[in-house]
Amino acid sequence: MLSKEDNELLTQTSAGTPGGDLLRRYWMPICPAAELTAEKPKRRVRILGEDLVLFRDGQGKLGLMAEQCPHRNASLYYGFVEDDGLRCPYHGWKFDAEGACIERPFEKNKDARLPECAKAYPAQALGGIIFGYLGPLPAPLLPRWENYVRKDGKRTITVLPVHHCNWLQAQENSVDPVHTYWLHAHILKSKGLDPRATAYFGRPIEAYDFDLCHEPTWSGIRKARVYGGDKPEREIGHPAIFPNILMNPQAGALVSHHRTPIDDKTTYIIWQEFWPSPDGKEVEQRDEDIPVTYLDHPKGADGEYDLSSFPAQDLMAWETQGAIADRSREMLGASDRGIVMWRRLLKEQIELVQQGKEPVGIIRDAALNDIITFHLSKGQMNLSLGAAAE
Ligand code: FES
Ligand SMILES: [Fe+2]
Image: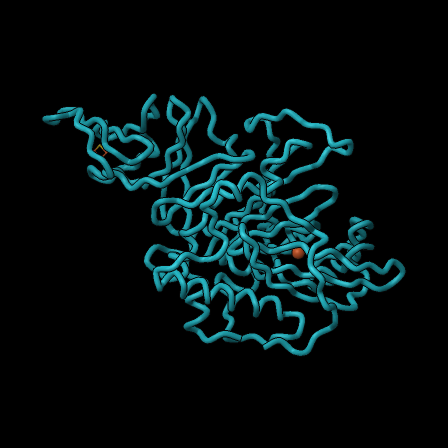
């Protein structure tokens, strides 16, 4: 349970709020790279409460800037993408990817370069996804997670429907080890769907534990479970990565789930999926050839959720907690210990940023960032059904 003040602190995302300032220290996925095409090299974007335009100029450079033109505020989204920048549709002022105004037709000194004219942010593509960084410069390195850079397999991407809830509800689920039994296995079983997943997640959970990790390239929490029943198993602890990622082994793929706040009450979720070749063979795959699947929102016209899939079941749980879950009205159990740990970590990091310090999981040393691998067998946890959460 949190005070109303702490709940606000942990869930705010806009610029100038402590939570928003923290989230701005991390690269955020914006969309699949394939969404910018030669025919339409621009896209409207809203992240962390800011309305932006993403574009790829004629030289292939990515630009991410405030949608409203600095001249008289018309939308740059309707502008013209040119070789060296984006030209406003209203009076034709042109801005490069760094936000400098490089042309003002019908003005004196029309070609004078005016730096820092439009509000622009760094953008980079990796592994088929475009990321933006909305924080103070210099930007840290974009983390090279193994699923983004490994060559011995192929990649796919899944874009989930916009979730009508705060990002933290999705992230807290990543350290919730017991929801899989009822929300996934039991619902699927009741519908006669997916017998394999039902059998896996329908086993009784006999123990669980959480491990706070501080690695040189990431921080987060590994959760692990011990299953009983006919096929007992001690599951390897896969990590939730601070602040808004889950790294998940999923049906033969290594998948990162990213939760980008659109604003305080809506969240964009994208999965980057890497499928290792069974024989370790390298696969050539250009970014634009990575297949992207878009999932529909499962809520029907009658207001009922269709709960036939894992992502739909999670979405229902997170949205029905409320647009911003009221954590002052909770009754936590022992299985929520990971969530308590996550909130504590989040609050500590918000406070660090407020003191002018760097939060965890920021990479500035290129030598650490060649490839970030996840040793999914690491971590000796002491698994038990714990005492009540704090
Ligand atoms: S409003 Fe953009 S050029 Fe005038
Ligand atoms: Fe789930």
